[in-house]
Length: 430
Image (cartoon, rainbow, N blue to C red):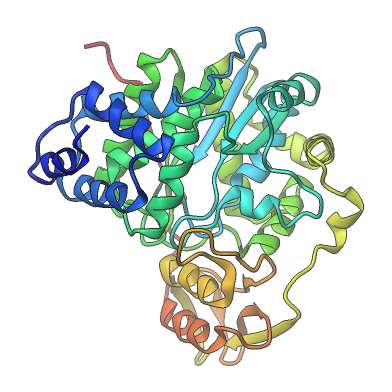
């Protein structure tokens, strides 16, 4: 194909045919089309968008670029995805929670994009954990353990994995068709029959308004439905970080607390809501009280340990995960109520410490991060601790402090925002 003409067509707002998209993606996958031309096309898509049909075609092409897993011999196969947020460690809790409820959780996850953390990065803070599994190992684990979470391998949706990394390095993350095709291609390749999507809305999310979130949710439901998946959508608030921790190892520790029934209220509420939705979709019992019980009686945490061990994680290391050794405490400059904890700037602060990527292939520091001591609605006195910043020998600390201080507002009064904004109904026929 003439790649420059293909890029020009999208720059001019023209629609691609499925055949053109197939040639382009195959050329990139084979190495015939270089990163710089794909980057130009990604930027053109961000500018001009894609039609619904183009988005569906791109999704299927990416999904079919490698092997498609066949899970039809397993009952109650489920998957979950979040569109990305600050402090979002729900997959670490939800996957074992669902498996302990009788579901078979088959999940492909990614690494951090922009200011948001990735599930695979978090899991790799556990010594020994292997995030890259072959197709045979993936299938064996879902049969034997009931839960598997894998990064993109060379076998499953390899073209999507290449695009995913390139988008992060070229400021082309925030595009509805690229987000939808990225998410749903992994979900189609993963083979699960039921899927719950947590679409984040707010300053710390890629989508800033409910209208954008509804459009993305509707697009992903349509893609899933055409492929025979039962898809549920939950819109959740990302104006402030989820939970009290932001940073890979810190978030694993908080997720384990949640699995033991001692997690923060917002994280626990979101995980239970997502569990209700997808358990209902796949036909399993989904009574809220029973789901909550699995977080308090040890069943969810036991499943977590079996999952981590199956992928090589050292269970003896879970209680002593390594954090960055240096601490800086930020304190309230005055008395009042915390009225804003701006999620985007908190995420950016962790990135300046080394906890995120600025370009493709960056190595991140898993031990740095921020632990909040107050969230929206918390009453504080002057001098009360607002957060502890975990850093390594001051690297990025000055900039992180500046970002954190701008993120926090203290007012005379404040009310915590709602966490669950809405659940989208299934798309009506026609």
